[in-house]
Length: 138
Image (cartoon, rainbow, N blue to C red; front, top):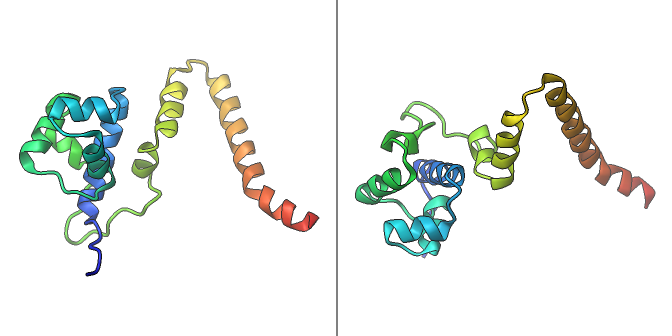
């Protein structure tokens, strides 16, 4: 039997649950405890592997303190294409990305923000070119 792929809306809702959970600084275990499921079930919801029922979505939005529709932010209509894997929304589902953005938001000095952006760009460039440099050495 072929494995069924998750629907794009289920993946999107899962990403939004993860983003909201991380913003509240809840672990998967804590969210699961508050809505009456295991952390493994929360993992499945966040990956889109399991669909979240309407009553469970309502519980999740209440626990996370967000409107129910916030869990559908970024959803597409039938005529729109689903979001690609590396959209800003997908990146925010990474806890390190969210922490970086939250920290960046707390920096009040524009010069410090600009310097940090230069540092991040330089590190990203170095990381991107490192495999090519390594291949030339061999």
